[in-house]
Image (cartoon, rainbow, N blue to C red; front, side, top):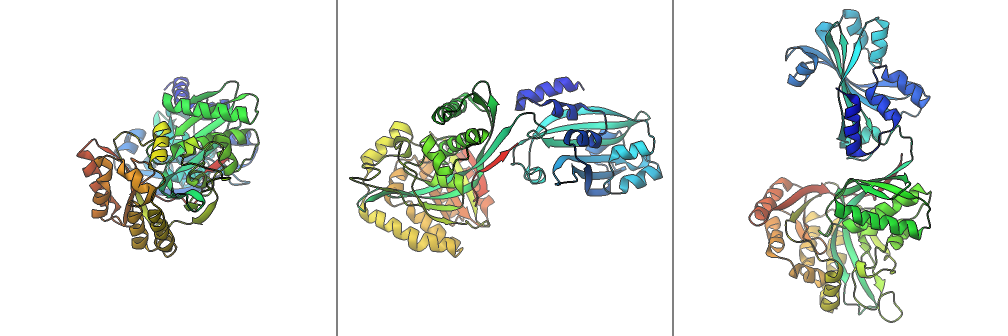
Length: 510
């Protein structure tokens, strides 16, 4: 293959690849020695797997052998001896019948670099690169490299050829955000379910108040680096413009010279009820601030970007995760708010204080079902709903508060899924959530009884929808099938089974 052409294609997919990364992708020399030269540290091998196995069809094609022939399967981490940073993850396959007994004995000894074995046995060999590509990091790769799931990995496959035949097939992987020649900030955010606003009556002297659950998936993953001009890549034009506007506003408000290049590696749709706007704004602001060594808190980021003026759940999810209740805002004469407004129309209002933060049980699973209907209310339409449908009846606010205090929170604290789920069910018929729900099409409202009938302990609509969620501990696949079947009868939709995330956004400097 033409490695130059492969790298050009990779750069079109992920952005600029550094000279060192190009060297690692294209080298035909000893990778271990090259890594020692790059890092200035002693590099060692840690063998994770070493076993003799029959060749499957893929291995047989890679090594020009017969399916079922025995191969040595080896998985290693190439890492620094000091600090133990994993630099490269490598998988190799070697046909046993092509090895001398001495070579095989050395190969089976753990933690010896293959290049060193070849040199010791004075074997004349060459490396032939087969592929170079970009892969998303799996959860396992994220753990190995201490990076976020879905961050790009750079991967290459090559053969070591001896006497005209493949002696060893090797695949090597390393993170795109390693071996850089520029400083880069990576921010990975959760999403959130917004269960309900608590008090949209205001008679108590306070208003708003939010209940939310932080979600592990979907999420937002962005990278940012200093750049002569502001640029945004990796997403559709609408998302690019949203990111560009946030970035330009943050740069101007912080009085920062220069600009940034932002790449959106992962995101989810806006205005479906999962808090994309807040998470995206906070992530962009955090990345820009960290690039300039400005270590701002989540509340400071929220004020900077105008988030949290009604519900504080998005800010708290970004900050600390888990199950969250915020205490709303002072209301009336002399208060922070004197009328009913969504966050988008509440610029300048401080994010509300978090009054409850609790770990969400990890064995409780959450199904998201998003019908393919128009997105939830936003902008002027959302503001009109707050203006015309508030205040809500005081007795409903009191009933909702009782559900939260005496059923939802005890259910969570006692890990009583049935009690927690029934409180979620009841909240859908009270206060402002009742208003939000009444404005939905049957494709959304009809989902809740379907999910409950399929075995969900609780089901509700997140924010203004159309995202609907179900909570359970077993049988989530059957609940998902019921949701898909219902949605397929109308316009379709998407589902995902996820779990709560008991931590906020992660930030890494590469």
